[in-house]
Length: 81
Image 1 (cartoon, rainbow, N blue to C red):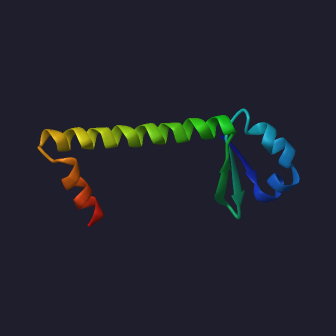
Image 2 (spheres, helix red, strand yellow):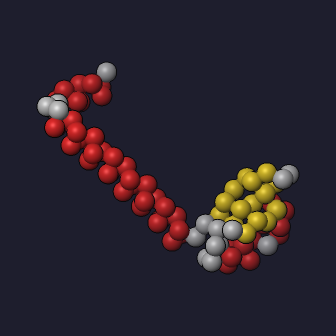
C-alpha cells in the first residue's frame, strides 16, 4: 500500500487517481492515517464480500433457529421488541 500526505494528495490528485487503479493509497495528515482511496473495482469487491458474509450469517442463524423449533412469527416478535 502506498502512503501520501494530504497536501500531496491535494496537489497531485490526478496521479493519485491513477495510482489507486493499481493499489490502495492511504492519505496521511499530521502523521495519522485519515483516508484510504481505492478503485471502484476494489470497492465493489469489498462490499460484495460484506454482503455475502452477512447473508451467510443470516442463513446460518435462520437454519439454527428452525432446527430449534423457532417459528418465523416468534422471531419477528422478538426482533420487534
